[in-house]
Length: 182
Image (cartoon, rainbow, N blue to C red):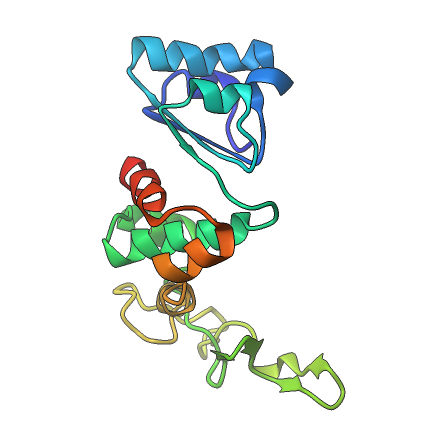
């Protein structure tokens, strides 16, 4: 749960993933129902089980157990690809503008510094590039390939609808519908 139940009555979209709020939190779920009735909020449920929450949902997207992160990887990729981001919020409230250290990378499932023989990481390239003033270097345009924003964009670009559908078992059209709601 990432929001207070009372906040939910003021939303336009409720996403329930990996839970069954209608049964586990019936008193709090009234706020979801209220938002749906009064604000015409949409309810999206992503879960392996068809639950009571799913039965009330405007959209139910089934997936295989344990594949939530792959599903979210596609959602993140979709948001990046279609520029469905609140850039000002991202710049002001996250580390997206921060530059990572020179040499930091992610290739073939491994972050930089991996020693295959010892099966350990040397984390020397992990972290942020520091300026002479002792503060993290930033790129307010978020275009530098070493800024966290671009690193995330690159990382999640591999979560294609085809790959994620294969992993999760969720049909591609269901992904699209969930992303359109978000």
